[in-house]
Image 1 (cartoon, rainbow, N blue to C red):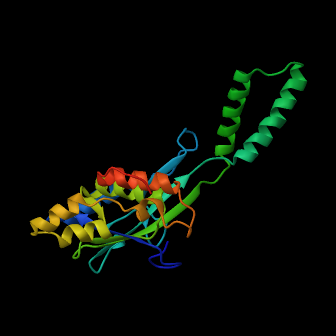
Image 2 (cartoon, rainbow, N blue to C red):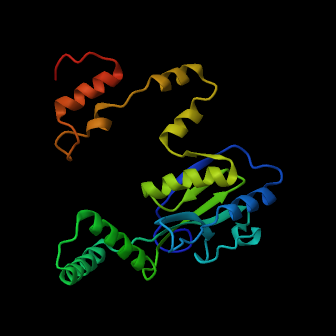
Length: 235
């Protein structure tokens, strides 16, 4: 969600490469090949990832007229997760264990408990609805810019893999690194300076006294100096 409704939280990307001349046919074929495949409750997989309609998460029959609008490819990245709640599994397993042990008059072994848990999880998969998560994706074909309406690391990593598989194109995160690279094009001096740039102490360590930091002050200085190729002589 995000592109059409809800809060606006997004991460921007630049598409690396150009769309093929027959992009309509090529992209439609790629998208249809990578739509979400519902999880088989009889199987063992607990996650499924793929495309769905940005307007209807249950619409998986994606033709060109369903995802291309005024120069934009608009899709939803959908992830289904089918995993019975751990607390429910634990509670029901305990009940089954007590019942079986009472009937047999003996304690179940660790191996028998594992088998019993697997059977119980298999039964619960058939009655537990999958958890559905969708994130909107909007790609401006003319500008070669793409927005994913989520900052979640897992969904952004999923986008990078699925986008490449679907469109045979790469994505570059749009931010300071990309802007700096574009700014230095054709300027050998700036290119050399950019390549030599290293993180500052504040970037690695934060500003002392203002917020919690992952390293102590001395550790931060040492790490920053090492990355800069300097020999730290003391605070």
